[in-house]
Amino acid sequence: MLIGHVADDGIAERQEPDMAERILHIGDRIYAPWNRERLFPARVTFLANGTAYFAYQDGETDRMPVHRLQPSNKVFLIESVSRKPTEKHWSEGRLLGEFLRMIGARPLYAFIRTKLELGHFLKLARMSSSRHIHLSMHGLQRKLVLQLEDVDIDEVIELAGDLKGKTVFSSSCLTGNEAFGKAFIRGTGADAFISPRREIRWADAALISQLFYKKLFCDGVTPYVAYRYARNMYPKHADLRFFKG
Image 1 (tube, helix red, strand yellow):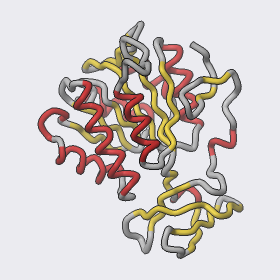
Image 2 (cartoon, rainbow, N blue to C red):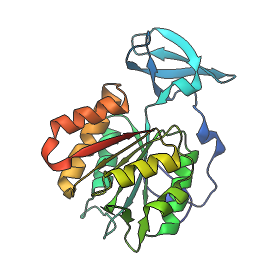
Image 3 (cartoon, rainbow, N blue to C red):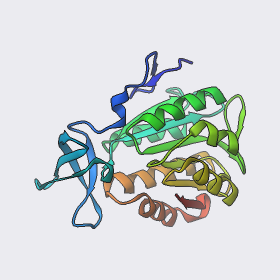
């Protein structure tokens, strides 16, 4: 397993993370508020002094501070399952990556096996301009279960660091309980943590995550509205919970 920056095709390269990943770039697709209402898709046209100039899809233009905008085309996917996904053996994370590409998003995929690798890629996710982190792995009530070792909630918080401004969607079984969810929000400062409270089958996890990101990116809504949509569309098997930072 190479440790390094994650490429779009899921191959880790031996290089330090680009510090420019922390900011937007000209041409990036974003969601921007319109008249203080819902978010609408737009594209960055110019950046200066912490302000982004952008154009909505209908041609209207506007500008506002970068921190008010939601980058729409990046999701940092971190996956750890019993067998590394291949062309013959798919997984929830790889399937989600293909779905995100289909709807025009930009998945950054990493397959991990150990606690050390989890910490490394959480750091890259923290430094990335992506506001969305997706964890695809087994879980217990107070643990994430990686391919080779378990990581309890206190260790997850220490490895994650400051996730302010990030929304974390975990498809890990049982991690949507109060003890895990509230501790994660309190310890990392993440904007939101979304996860199933019950055990969830692989196929159900794949469907619920696609519903969430479809609503988030295609319709330009907030993570909470996307969560409500996914939960209402698929209520029985997922039992998703939303913890707000």
